[in-house]
Image (cartoon, rainbow, N blue to C red; front, top):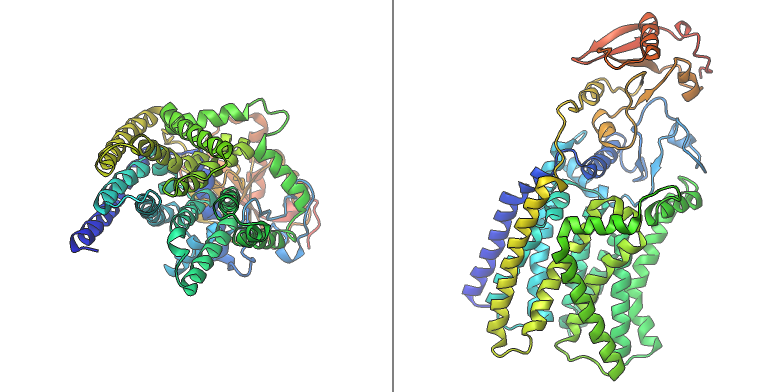
Amino acid sequence: MKKSRIFLFLAVIFAICVINWRFGDSGSAFNGRSVTYQWNNGSTIKFVNCWLDEGARNLGFVMYENPRSIEFKPLSERVPYTSYPPADDRVPYVSYPSTCVIPVFLAAKMLHKNSIDFDFMYDYLKYPFLVDTLLIFFLFYLLFSITLNIKHPNANLIVSFFLTMAWMFLPDNLLYLRFTYFSDEWVISFVFIYIILEIIAPKIKDKHRKIRYLYNSAKFLVALIGILSDYNFYFFLFACWLVRLFTVVYEEKGGLRKAVSASWIYVLPVIIGTGIFLWRSAPLMDLSYYFRFKFEEKTYGFPDDDKSPILMLLGNYLKSYTYAGFFLELALACLLIADAIRLFRQRRMPGRSYFPLLKIGAIILIPPVIHVLILMYHSGENQFAMMKFALPTIFSAVVLCYYFLHNANYRKFYFAVGAVSIAITLIINIIVINKEQERGIYKWVSNPALAYELEKFIKSHSEYENVYFSGTEQILPNPPISLAISNKRVYFIRYLHNISEFFPDLNKAANVRFVVRKSDSGKKKRMLLLEDSIRQRSDLLFESGKFEIYQLRSRSDLPEFVGRLN
């Protein structure tokens, strides 16, 4: 590699890092109090804080909805439930494996944190977003250099830089990859790494046996982590497996034995990863009930839900990529399908320069489509599911440009000019999309009245033995942002005897506390009578600008409390 090329390569990498670090925060204009911000970040913080408090190994790397507190049964005494969880159960979260939480937990341990908050996540997420941006750059560069076999490294570097910027400034990436985090965001990195490994596969085929072994080991490890991260990787690996079978049967003219031999690297991670997930989840709850409920929830919703999943899904896609992105991907899909039909009818293989592009195109385009069609309700309910289409949208523009210029004279020159032109066009369109999104689609205006004063107040008095009740306020496990801040539940009660109904065997060491909102505005007569009864039986411990905390003097002062003391 020439020195000038090395210098250009390093300059491009440096420019990507600087732009990502400097302008990545531009998505903060979309942030505010978005639903994803509450659920994804809130869940991550809540689960990580439980691990930091009790030890990840002590909890078996299980994510629990409720932090450790005296009103809950010890984990050694809990039994799997088959319906709605009881009030004294900490409720394990088994919708997804806990792999995505591990890197955040390790980062907190390395920085000697006893707990993390949203400021920690804001700083932490700079690094995964930078890694994803660099992975996209390498993906595009290798796509041009290996898959499209364009012998013009400098042009490949420049075009890859523009396309990387186009990908980075897509609204969904600026918001969800930079400011929110859970399994959907975590798994994106491993999808990119696996695509890169698939792109370089032709270069590995003829290498030394040790190189091939390291390559296959890397593919297996990335696939296993992906399977243990998010369901998206199941669909992605399925598409990769189909492409590999197609290659064996039609390109390599192999038989059944060779097809089976080529399948292990795709099938084995799925078997092992799924087995680990089920093995860890089975003792926690009745999986047949839970997954049946979750499958219905994530696929087509519930029978009494009047929302159309397909319309919700289409609406989310158009919010993210507009009709321009939709028709780009539709045009490329039609082109690939038409070529595939033509090749099957003629019973011949595509040219060597075209076949790698067909394979990479399939593993980029097919998985997100399968994902959103199967998990349609979940994808329609959650805008962040559209992140999966960021790479296919950019890729579609690149490949359509390549098709258009493929047979032109001076192909290298025209391709370079055309690709740079389409990259610039994409960036202009994305800037326009961002401006449109900022007008209202992604703009959540933070309500000054919702400054989490209650949560922060409870956090400062969240000792293990305290149990909080209130006639006006409550802090639930979900949406998790409130509990992530307070680290303590607040239970809503209508009458004092509700306490014994919730926790008939409440530990005698528990401090029964009440949260009272100072202002009587909007309170019904029942609430006022309840608060009078609380004040008569309790002592005022703490107060903030809007709230007071009382503690029950004695259980004997609460005749309605008829629970058994243990």
